[in-house]
Amino acid sequence: MPSPTDSTAPADTTSPTGPTGPTGPAARRSDATRAAILDAARERFAADGYERATIRAIAKDARIDPSMVMRYYGSKEGLFAAAVAVDLRIPDLAALPRATVGETLVRHFLAQWRENEVLTALFRVAASNPAGAERTRGLFRDQLLPAVRRVCPDPEQVPARAALVAAQLLGFGLTRFVLRFPAAVELHDEEVVAWLGPTVQRYLTAPHP
Image 1: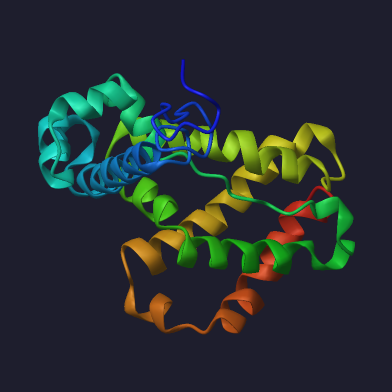
Image 2: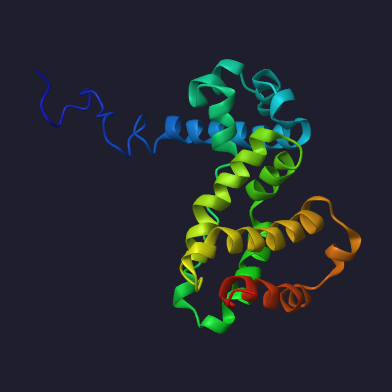
């Protein structure tokens, strides 16, 4: 029986920081594989749409076997949901000075459009595909609607006001970051805030017209 100091004693591979633990090489390879699959899926869904994109094509783009995609995500539907999962990180509008909520929301979404490639990929798909459109509706229903509810003066108007806010933010995001209308691309952020901020502010806080 080896002593505690015997150099031939087997290594402990159950440690969370060991070779086979969640922070070891195997876990890092798994994370890299997942990232490669999701990157390839976003590009493929954006280029081909949900219906035409195939697991085989996505796997080829990610340079892995198609069975690995199914192992991690189960189905194309599961892969699509993971690929376009977005946290908009909308600030708590009720915690801001009331007169600034419109411009704050516009600035926030400008940053999201610019920095969040997943958001851009989702809206590319949403523009031409029912699955992408449904995912986008769910995104704004689950994240924008509660934010609007925090500052809306009339609870019954929350859905309508949230839809109007979404029309402004989505419309500009599509024209600038997806369709890339030259005039929209050339606008400075401060100009965008100056144009859209008061409109979004009115949708959020003004009395019923």
